[in-house]
Length: 216
Ligand code: HEC
Ligand code: HEC
Ligand code: HEC
Ligand code: HEC
Ligand code: HEC
Image 1 (cartoon, protein in one colour):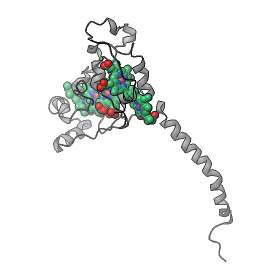
Image 2 (cartoon, protein in one colour; image 1 turned 180 degrees about the vertical axis):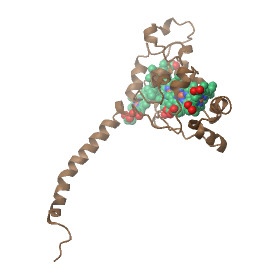
Image 3 (cartoon, rainbow, N blue to C red; image 1 turned 45 degrees about the horizontal axis):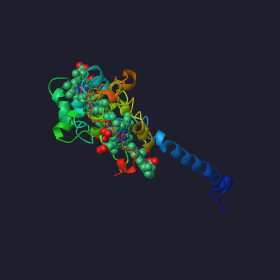
Image 4 (cartoon, protein in one colour; image 1 turned 90 degrees about the horizontal axis):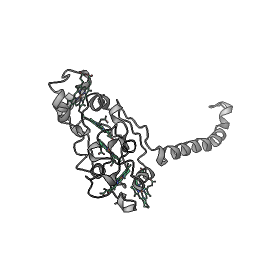
């Protein structure tokens, strides 16, 4: 009888049987660790279709966040700017021939949006609204970090339920004057800002702690 497989292969099922629990435990443990709320997506820094730099535009050039994220103050969504916003400068005035901006010109010519990759994302069952937070004086930096120093946007906060609740229970020291929300260098705790003494505030903030506040 010709032997198709060498003799040691008889023990393969045994090896598999021994290795499988170890592999499974590693995978389950890994998933459990990485998907536990405090680790979800912190450090997530996806590659974008074009090397747009906040460090350059918002940091060195000093453009206000709302120049591009114009809906943040009025709507739930902060929204990424349309191609048109970029073309205002890059169509004729600034680096119209740049190779780095080729994807922008192609998108503009085709009328299709640039396929930006989302960095921050909550699950569908959690409700979030930018405008409410900005109106209450919560600065972008509290949730997104020093975006003005990032060449590539990176998630720095877990955006987990316990993280949201931490501030909702104790917003003092994390809310500032409304006109400072896009000033990422402003820290209400360092500045000693006291919301109760700000005459421009018509009422004190009351962030929801009940489930239906964030799960609607
Ligand atoms: C010149 C336009 C422009 C300005 C000014 C600007 N942004 Fe952006 N922003 C973008 C574009 C384009 C993207 C999508 C590409 C990316 O993620 O880098 C983006 C993405 C982001 C994201 C990630 C969104 C996601 O996918 O989760 C955050 C957070 C953000 N911006 C915050 C800010 C803050 C804070 C400021 C002010 C300090 C600011 N931006 C100023 C254009 C701009
Ligand atoms: C208000 C004007 C303005 C707007 C709006 C603007 N930029 Fe810029 N951008 C600049 C300036 C100024 C530079 C730096 C030019 C230089 O280095 O000489 C620059 C540089 C760049 C570069 C580097 C190009 C290279 O060849 O080095 C990229 C990429 C870029 N911008 C992408 C974008 C994108 C994407 C948008 C829209 C979300 C945008 N810009 C909106 C003014 C603007
Ligand atoms: C209280 C926390 C908080 C503050 C303050 C905040 N953001 Fe966000 N941001 C988030 C969360 C959470 C998401 C993800 C939202 C989702 O998935 O529904 C997000 C998403 C975004 C996005 C992606 C598009 C979108 O709307 O989902 C952009 C762009 C953005 N933020 C920019 C800004 C800018 C600019 C500011 C300041 C003007 C700001 N954010 C202030 C928490 C915050
Ligand atoms: C740094 C502090 C801070 C963080 C972080 C924060 N919030 Fe808030 N939140 C507030 C404040 C302040 C208010 C405004 C309450 C007011 O106006 O009375 C608020 C209000 C809200 C409201 C009420 C909106 C409405 O329509 O009444 C919701 C929902 C909410 N937050 C969800 C979230 C979620 C979800 C997260 C986490 C992803 C989050 N918040 C993170 C401070 C924060
Ligand atoms: C301040 C906003 C906020 C409040 C209030 C809140 N949640 Fe959440 N909840 C969230 C966010 C944001 C997530 C998504 C977390 C993530 O993606 O890691 C979440 C996730 C969940 C999940 C999914 C499991 C998980 O941990 O991701 C459950 C279940 C849940 N919440 C139940 C509740 C219950 C019950 C209450 C009331 C006692 C409550 N939540 C109050 C913001 C809130």
